[in-house]
Length: 175
Ligand SMILES: Cc1cc2nc3c(=O)[nH]c(=O)nc-3n(C[C@H](O)[C@H](O)[C@H](O)COP(=O)(O)O)c2cc1C
Image (tube, rainbow, N blue to C red; front, side):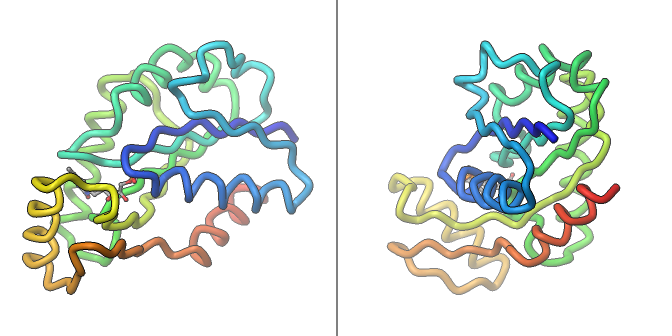
């Protein structure tokens, strides 16, 4: 099966996640193409049997490049089986407010793009202090403190559950 993975990342965690996904699928014998959406202008979605789109949440939105890609290709995406991976810190843990927030983020994405992925999974991301500028670092430390998370200003902290992600992929492949 030919599977397209198109993604957007801001600090790099989504890139790490889709690389894991690509390796996992390749190990199962699938043929995978991995593209940052910013470079996927020539990619013909019609050449693929399935597609995974992935992006991360910043201030309540996915990357506009990802929105543009989904909007432009929605007709082709509608014809194949699709999985959307939304990476965020709200997906770490089971706070009902955070989960409701993610539903809103997803609704805003589908309203803007007109594309409804066949399956959506929210994946816990990471604090990437090594990538933040001074103000971001300060804001993210404040958010961590609100959540009762202990973080170091010069150390990344990852929440991604790789085993759970593998289970999602297993289920999606066998569906
Ligand atoms: C400036 C900023 C804003 C963020 N806003 C949100 C948010 O609104 N909701 C959320 O759940 N996570 C938010 N996050 C957390 C990111 O979604 C998380 O760090 C994710 O792993 C980033 O993925 P990336 O490295 O692929 O960009 C924010 C992170 C930053 C740095």
